[in-house]
Length: 113
Image 1 (tube, rainbow, N blue to C red):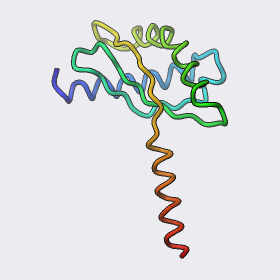
Image 2 (image 1 turned 90 degrees about the vertical axis):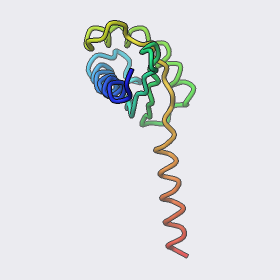
Image 3 (image 1 turned 180 degrees about the horizontal axis):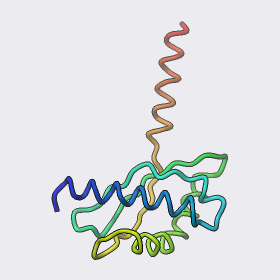
Image 4 (image 1 turned 135 degrees about the vertical axis):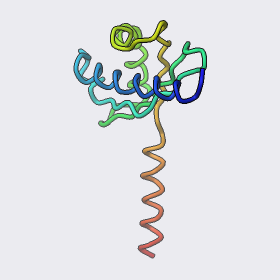
């Protein structure tokens, strides 16, 4: 499948999952999660869903919560997007925000010296 179509499907999955989690998730913990991006495999069999969250929760705990909710989220997603086969959802913590904050901190320290 071409790259543009995969990116479009990934964007649609990101948008829909964000709405599902915000509007329909029963767990208040899941509502702390922000979906940042989604990468879809060429065969549409797998979607890597990148997330971050607010709060002081343990990263492993949040990962477990998402893994436990993945079947529910996939079922809800299947009702909202128009593709033949809804991909398996694999959640991956997005470290780019922490990385960016760390870079900003380093730059601020350099300017203060």
